[in-house]
Length: 275
Image (tube, rainbow, N blue to C red):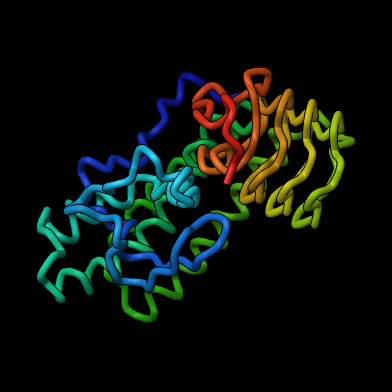
């Protein structure tokens, strides 16, 4: 459901061009997704230089949250533009810079990814110019050093970008006038097998552990939906809107699960349980 004439930006992580910022800056708590608790700004004990020493076995080692994480390209950008390619090891100043810059860059890169994706929806052609301009503005804000007034202005811009995305979503879903409004709905562990969710607004819906086998999701807006451990076997997401790779990586599926053309089938869908 995207327009191939609008070339997408490569807003995906390039770990080879990053100094492992996602392994240092964020905090995480011991849970089903993380085997240990780690404080913000401290290196993960599994980090060896700039590479994860257990990367091939992250899921089996209890770090499925790491497998599903995507910085949308913020890591390599902060490394290049903020840290100037320098390492944070042994430099409290550079580590402090990374701790400040990386979360903001990731936030704006994620927004840019959604805007870029919306700009390739044929149904939202009337908004393409505005979406691309907003995308570029988000990318400009990703590494900007803002004062308090500028941060307030950026928050206003963020709200305007979100409204633009909602407008694009409505245009893309107008082919399904009976699509359900399930924004923010609590649907954890619900039996939705075979459900007709075409054109549904599922922005921010909690689908944790939900049974979505064979569900029809063509035109469904899955922005920010929690799909952890959701069963997508046989479901059709090929025409779903705003599906991220991270959402798929936390869910369960199989070879019969229909996927958007620009996303990859997670390796664990061949037999491993999702984290």
